Amino acid sequence: MSKQLPNAERLKNNFITYPNRWAIGLLSAWMLLNTLVLATTDLMEAKRVGRELAVWEPFCWELSSIVLIVLAVWPIARIDEKLKAKLPLLGVCAAHAALVIPFSVIHVTGMVWLRKLCYWLVGWEYKFGNVVYEFLYELRKDAMTYITILIVINCFQFIVRRLQGEASYVQESETSTKPIPDRLLVKKLGKEFLISVADIDWVEASGNYANLHVKNSVYPMRITMTKLERLLPEGVFSRVHRSAIVNINRVTHLQPLDSGDYTIYLASGAEVSLSRRYRDNFRATSATAAG
Image (cartoon, rainbow, N blue to C red):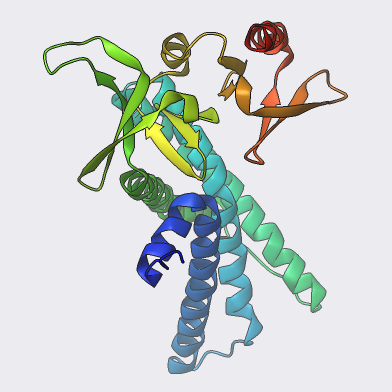
């Protein structure tokens, strides 16, 4: 009989396996809680000063803003990944500083139109006020919001990688810089253990990291995809996309797409895109593996 893991351990394993689901769940919970707190605060403040305010109005104000902020988290995370992969830290900071204004323009514009729609549905009219003044007012808050989003994204990614562990090639000795190509050393929460390179199902680019998918686990490795592609065994691993490498031995079948690309299905159930650019290389590697 297999030993059942403690609840805390199962929860941690679930978080490590499905970090994106947890991110969506936590964001949704924050959105609902934040809307409730801010909207009820607006109602309490209005009552204190004797201002008449319909109950639905503050919920409209807060939701119209928070929904757009939550929707911006994923694009900002993707942009941050791409910037960190291409630019030094100073360049990343400068790029994000420049993105604050378009972020605020999109946020304020979308927020105002959502409010106008809500007010129109109840037969009222929403007035934004002086456009320049109100935009500058919102821009100040949006700058802090953008910074907060970046901090939360990077903290979340740090926690995930800390729990997942970080992989690196095993050196022949403490004084050697030559890696042993068939084994990886994973450091995870103060512990170290080895995994076989042959057990890697596929590799996914993630900013400055390459995420190694091994069975039900994901191990980040601080390395470029180009360098990792050179280190992985030839005839076993094939680059199939700018952001993906697959283990040929894990491929079950391919599904052609109208665009000329393919979807690769792996034994683990994962689906990986095969770009036309890498199609011939994939076929050659597959033929080598079959032979």
